[in-house]
Image (cartoon, rainbow over all chains, first blue to last red; front, side, top):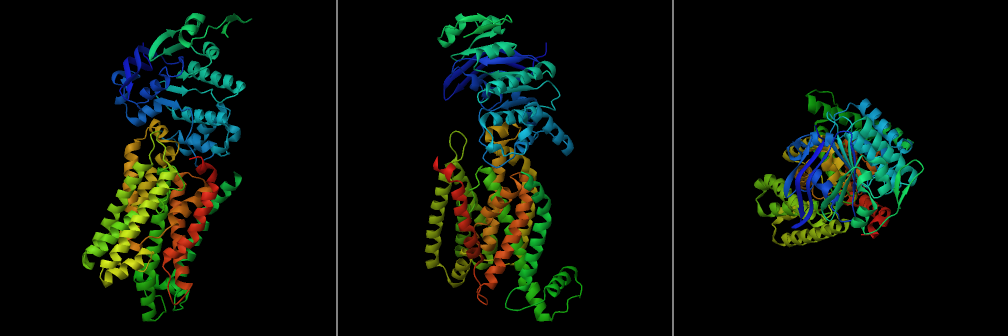
Length: 256
Length: 346
């Protein structure tokens, strides 16, 4: 079976301290993985290792069965995108110009660039403020503009791309959170994008993700189907809070 | 912003006209009043070896040997300063990071001043640009190291303070050298310390023209990467850019540009700050557009400043650096006011 992303005996240390240890994990094309875990569990470090920002002290990361280090920077960028938590941008770019920067590793002709930019901005519900200054947008709006940029970046991938989302819903209001997760899920199921998203809301993870990676204290505590993993007992063991499990009228489990 | 679409359409014709007006004014202003049309014909004659101009021989000498080289030098240096400014600001992701303000120009000035005093005149022609480049490069690297925080941001406060420190040090060394310099070197130093386009030797003219052209091409090639860099260094790396290499290349290229500009015309401040900022405010920060438009605006602005320097107290001539500082310093204060909100949180 071909995988989009494979982590093999991965060990990440920073400043001499071991941060994350994952024996084996993989993502298939079209799969939506939610990464969960308390603060300091190693979620962001995992992303830093996948994007080669940090070099693992041992073990390897494969993107489409090829070590991430062996990809050319440009080809890798076409197949691996990451949505950052916050943006440093202070220059007066318009929202659509920010999205267009996503095409940096691509060589799109101008008319194609314009139509692709519009396409992804409409998908992320940002087209209505395409001409406004990025810096004047609200946190949630900026996050969605950045998402459009990332999706444009991986839109020309030859193999199913991998998209890492670092807390994509953190600044969104409730409606937009569901809209965004629905979009991401649709991209994974219809366009075979592999999505790895750090989420905080367990019920959203249960509802949208195909699989859960539960990290705790730098280890993969559990991985598998949401219904199997997110039980009151595991939640209590990892977060130190025993939730109550309810079943909705539609038959879904909810932890509160 | 609908007005930007209109501005973008008008930018090239408007700035082109401004540049042509600047060239004509630069050729015609001075103690000797000559017709603009005949002056242009004289230049045409000189370039294409024709005999169209009806000016007398000594008038032709004034145009061809004095005013035309000076015009060209203003053009190239203005463009060079403006694009180097635009790139430095992009590199540091800060509109206040101007080579003049963060001390790169002062560093280059220090190198150049040392070369002027230490080497004999015949040799210092070649040594000055090299020494200025080295001075500028060392300062750039130093300032960049100082201002880089652990999170990958650059600190504006450190940038500005580094500029103050380097400028103070340079001022002291140049002041010290005026005591040990001989007469010729002293005259060179004083004139050049305030910035002047008077010394357009053919060598410096060709050197600045070549440098201006090369940097324009190279910067334009980096324009998209520079846009990505504005998002943050990690983001640029995720977009497939080798950020370490890009930064290194840009710092060296800019040090060459500033080094050559400073050794040709002394320290002319604020062009590199004002011009890119004006373009960004009216036409947006996209480097693909910003760089060529900054070049043409910088050229036009320095030409006009030089004309002002020549006619203001005619027949006496002001150093052009004084004029650009008179325009630029208030602009810098305006920028500080605008950025006060952001700066006060640092």
